[in-house]
Image (tube, rainbow, N blue to C red; front, side, top):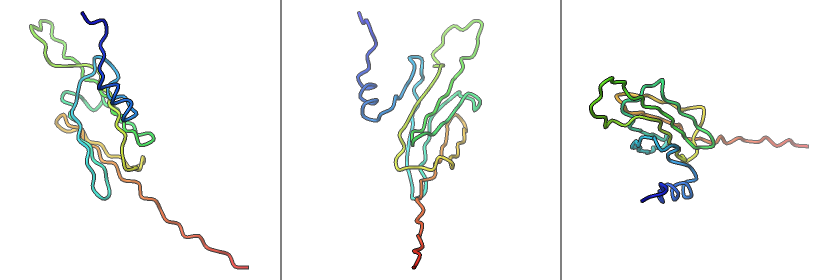
Length: 131
């Protein structure tokens, strides 16, 4: 008999990455991929059945957080229900540093596409006054 639900990998993830991957026991699991090129960081997240109105994306201190809710269809006489529904939350630390003002997201066919522009520090030349 189990008295509590302990997931050692969740604890490891929180300690190693500094963020929680899942925030509620009813959360659904979605696959995520991250890659980059010279100018941008890209993410794809599988969110089948999630509508754009039930989706929120935030970026703070280079931590991207995706929150979604997949609503369960109401069937009066459901005989079997295997499709997961519920809330989803995933936070991912993005490296390298990205520009918080330049984020694009698109939800298409149950897949969320996110593009973040890499931060490009500006070099400022300082004029030296003479005399």
